[in-house]
Length: 317
Image (cartoon, rainbow, N blue to C red; front, side, top):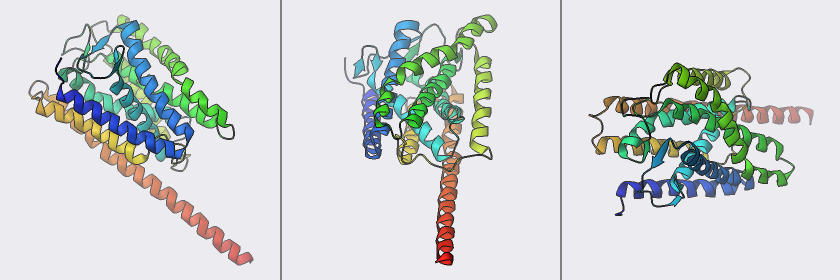
């Protein structure tokens, strides 16, 4: 089978970002590096598990590197998406109890932009659903799963972060995180899996059920971001991703699929996909501004506290 330039660009690009992220994580310490590796393993577990157990989709044979049915690049991309979301959430100063919900909203904002484009490019194919069903050919259950995938990995990884300080051997527990995270995902999806055939049995149906889940996650995430008891913007030491990698990888994912949508002439088929892709790409700008404002406020507060302490010491000297 001849090599497809699209897949070469995708796989080389994702691998480059992942190596950049891995180097940055390793400089921070062992736990950030283990988090990134386990996120990639979790991504491959997700893809392999779904294709073997549920058989709801399959990948194109044009992917160069695969582990059985799961393209390695998809696992690396999962790692970049989840790790990037967690880094941005920490930079916003979100408390731990709300952080997994913010992470989930940041992740789903990417998939809503690119999944319907990806199937038209041919990267993967959903079984039993037409291009006009679900969300432009993507089943609603996929988006509901994205919320739980991100929440589950974030919840377990943040628990390891909390228990590891002072006990370095516990950092190795991070490599086991994909297992309980996958269990949480399966349990979290049960209400949707039970209700969808009853209330919306059409192929790819359940968008309003997903909308309910999204609304609940969004309310909790919004409270976490704007609540008065926020923590200082942090995460620099423990994060598996540098903030620059987190932001740049999100923009790169948006731009890759937006470019494919335009260059391959797909816009006339479903012009709404262009609107959605541009809106969600545009949302990255206020997000970046909010992150910058939170970090500057934290830095200013720390600087003022140091000056106050210095003056107090001089006054008592």
